[in-house]
Length: 473
Image 1 (cartoon, rainbow, N blue to C red):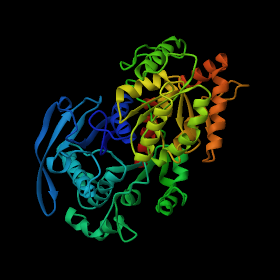
Image 2: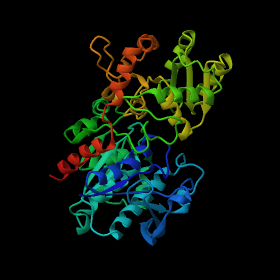
Image 3: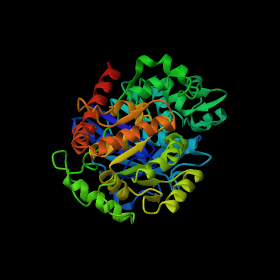
Image 4: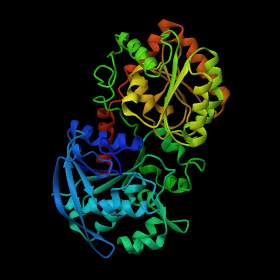
C-alpha cells in the first residue's frame, strides 16, 4: 500500500513536541511492516543542512493565491524513510516553527505544495495520512479533487488528532485566496462564524484516528471536545484510537548512545551507573539509595505542573531528589528555580529542551511524574517504562491506556495512577511508589513488567495498516 504521511513537524528535521516524534517514526515503521510509505514536511530554518541530502525537485509550481508560486523539495532518508521537505523560505525560514499570526496561511501553502509534489512523484497514494490541524487543508482539497481529477479518485484520507485544543482558526474570508472557493470547501471549514482547519479535517476525512482509545472517548465530551465534540460524536463510527509507539532505534537502554551505561530487563546494573552520572550532571550528592523523581515536559497548565508544585515539598521531605527538564510559562519556571535555590542538594533543573539530557534523565531516574490535566497519548511514560523508570500518572488519555497500577500482592502492573485532579491523590501514589521502591524485590518486578511491554512503532504501525485497509474497504 502506498502511503503519504504529511506533518508540520517530524524528527529529526523539526520538533516542538510529540507530533514531531510520531511523524518522524511512523513512515519508517510502516516501511518495516511492508508498506510503501513516505513523508512530506516543511523545510524550516531550523532544519539542519546535513539532513538535506539532495534537491529532488527544484521547479515545484504551486497553485496559490490566484497564480503559480515556486518552491523546491529536498530529499532525505535521515529518519529511515523517504522524506521530501518543502522549501519555501518566505513561509518556513523563520526564527521559530509556530507562533505567527498567519500560521494558517503558511500551512495552507504547505498542504497545497505537498499535493502538487505528490503528483510529481508518480502514482497516486492509496492513503494520505494527515496530522493535526496543519493538514486539514489537504483533507478538504483531496475530497474536492476526487470529483474532477482522476489522479485522486481512489485516494483515501486518514486524519489523526494529536491535540484537539489547537484548531487552526482564521477568518473565513481568507479561504478564497488559497483556492478554497466552492461551497463544499467553505462549508467544510465553517465553524462558529470563522474557519477552522481542524474542523475541516474532522468533517471530510474518510477515517479519523487519535493517539489513544481513552482520548478518543474523552474528546467526544463537552469538557474535552473544545467545541467539536458534537462532530466527533457524529463521526464516532469512523474514529479509532491507536497509541503511539516508541522508536526502539532511538529509545533503547541496550543501545542508546546518549547514556553512559547500557542495561535491559534481565540485567539492570547499568541503570545504577546511569543514576550516578545523572546526579553528577546536576551536581547533586551521589547517594544512590535515595530515589530520583523526574519530569521532562513543557511547563504548561495542561501538564499538571500545579500538582507537582503542591507536592514538591512533601517529596523533598522524604529525602528524595527532584530533577526537572523543560521550559514554558514563567510562573512555573520561577517555581522550579525557587525550589532549586531552596534545596540545591536535592533539586536539579534545566530550563529549555535538551534531547541528550532527556535520554539521561529517562535512564537515570527512578520515577517519572506525569500528572496531566489531559494527555492525548504521551510518550515519556512509554520511554520511562522502556528504561525501568516507573511512571506516576493521572489516568487520562494515553496515560490511562499505557500505565497499569502496580499490585504488589499479585506482582502485576507497571506504574501508579490516580484519577481525580487533586494534589492529595497524586501524593498518595507518590507514597505508594516510595513504599515499593524500598522493597527491592517488588521494585525489580515492577521495572521488569514495564520494560517487557511491546510499545514499539512496528506494533503501532501494524494497527495503522489495519486502519488503512478499513478506510479503503
